[in-house]
Image: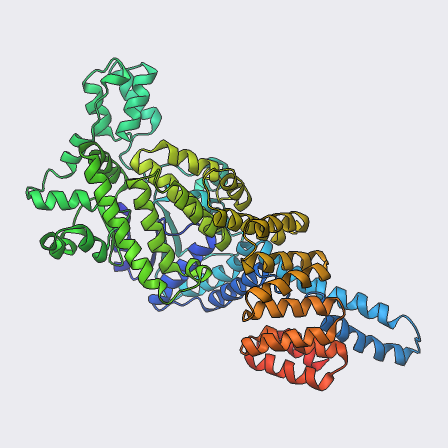
Length: 614
């Protein structure tokens, strides 16, 4: 409520405001969300948007192993041309080829370092551009205020980056950029210690643990088990701590659940039974919008919901979405669980089915699994669906959520982190310790989930289908390959092939791992099998062409790259690599034609111009 009020005050003072909650799970998502919200207020961060697009292209290329001119034949050829001319002028008869290879490698290494910096520290690369754009945007408004809500959930993934942002590690920010952090706990001293003199802290009405213990001690309650029970069920709300202490419990078994009393206090002003029921039901989802309350409530209650939801003192609204304060929602959820397990399961299942319907509708235009996981709207519905299914029937969905985590690990570290936190939240909200323990094992205690740790845990679990197990090995193999652990990558991908030899992607990724390790003949063998299984996938032909190229089989390489162009004529990389292969083979006119086409498709890629000039 306080955050909402501050946001309103800022907007009245002609400030641009940004509101972020637990829909963001890391710095890249936060910067993208800030950029999107500011753009809607007429303050686009154009340079950052372009840089982020480049980063994502590089990440996608790295995921598929697409080389971006690194140590390429074209680099060596360009160096050869320059050094041949220099050698002729200086009368140097020998060693030009060796010098050309060295110079070509140097050019490639410089490009590789630039790309490596972007991929190894993407946040460090894009944040300075973000800061520069944000500074420009701040000049057009009285202030730019960034609100980070529910920070107890997002803090682990954002803390270090946000501290560095405020500390101006990425560039100087004007004083008109204000950061507001709202959460249940204090800022971590280990991260924010040096910045605390510059932080204005506003403490709300929940007790700290020490304050709650002090009150209980003054009430004569000192038994540790009893104190722990009171702290657990009260969420340290002063009114609840005092109420529980007033009963003078002498053991944890005498500590009553305060949920009913707490909820009664929250709803004491609402006399309409139907409205009270609707308020309780709307607390079940993590956030509510018009589609959700229409699916959850009867038509009469749903028709007026928008009018009264935003007026609730413990609800914040943002862009047509409503979120209950965590303390209030926790008490309502506990009451709902205690009153009727059947109703709890039924209502969560209703919500899960709603999101499943929305998700499957989207899938008509997203037939590919990878495409679905790359689509933000699809991920949102899938995440909400699985949250509600875990709350309703955690045991029945124990394998489905692990399968989701495999897909999430394949998509990105941020997506995996989101899914691990989803599991923890479902366990917390439904009081299922097996779920919170599962989240901890998958890496919930870390700022961001580690794909290798999560996949190792998943592969240790019984009951996984053969397809899911093969997919997990493939996902781990891909992460090994990206990290440069080529031997482990080949081992995992070989296991994936053993489990599911008919999956073209298993052969494709092992082919890329062999290619990265310099095993070109093995790469050709794997990619040939991938082509047999999926002959119309341009990437299979592109990569076999590149493997042939590295092996010196230029004619076969040109054949494969030509097929890649036939299948995907608008991909600049296909024309670029056939052009450089023609160059290597001495077919300069064909090389110029291909590189001219690559320039037409991607005029901002300097390598296309450089190799055509060569």
